[in-house]
Image (cartoon, rainbow, N blue to C red; front, top):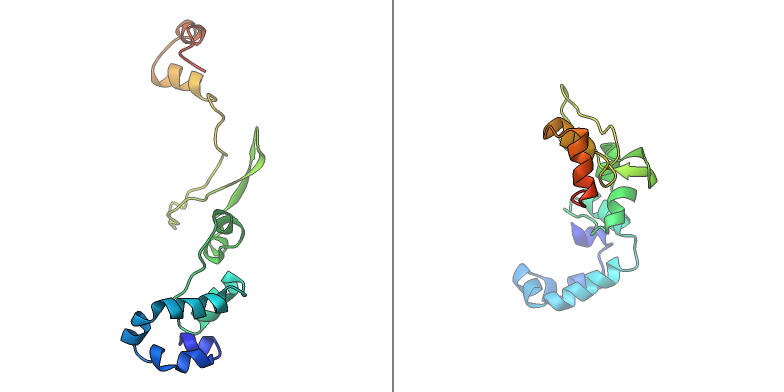
Length: 142
């Protein structure tokens, strides 16, 4: 399937690639041929071409590819843009399980350092304003 997708290059008919054992024995040479074919093409174009031919293939992604080019993330509507006090519009990951009854949403971008400290100390730990002020004055809090 892969050889057909590559327009059947002449090297693929050589005896050293005729069987799986032969390909394993000559894997460095095979890797060189495949690298010379893939290196002059767009990685996502190669992925699409091979997948269309029935070959399991995926692009080796850079971190930015996940955001800008990944077709699965795009089809799932994975990325959202939310306002952030320091970053402006920030792209954020979506909710991993896409459940029909409880789909989940991303409502806010990441908090700033210390943004919820007072709320946690008062609501969760039960500290009053004077205790929180003392903790800040002592340098225990940011």
